[in-house]
Image 1 (tube, rainbow, N blue to C red):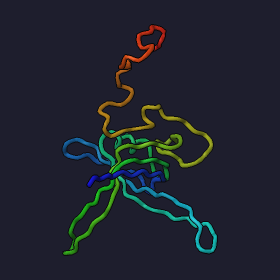
Image 2 (spheres, helix red, strand yellow; image 1 turned 90 degrees about the vertical axis):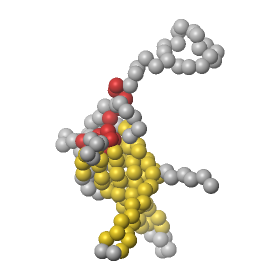
Image 3 (cartoon, rainbow, N blue to C red; image 1 turned 180 degrees about the vertical axis):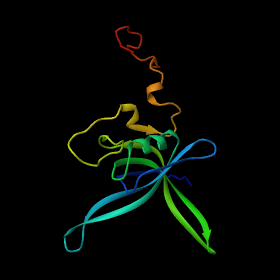
Image 4 (cartoon, rainbow, N blue to C red; image 1 turned 45 degrees about the vertical axis):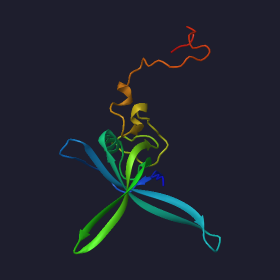
Length: 163
């Protein structure tokens, strides 16, 4: 039987990001994410449901998140679920957390390095720092810029195409 493990969440950080480094030198950041949902109850009243998730990021994604985000910052995370199990005081415990593989910062950056979460003035971070994929080995600003298209479709050899 096939398996599929993907999760996409958009919400706000519940606490400042904790950044640490593994002995191998890889960066790891952990933070909480609150995701709000509105629904109608039995009486027809709108109520807010809030779900809390623990998120873990690795590598350059973890460093970028800790540099640009703070408590209250809006963020979009795509990743996978992972269940951690351990034993404490003779009892088995477990917790499901999200391993973030891609991150999208929502909104602008404030003066203090983190997002203020509101306000009408928005400063945009450079595009290469707005979207981070943990599988990328180099920041997009260092990616090769002279990549050429492949294929042999109609018009491929026309010199007027600005590739």
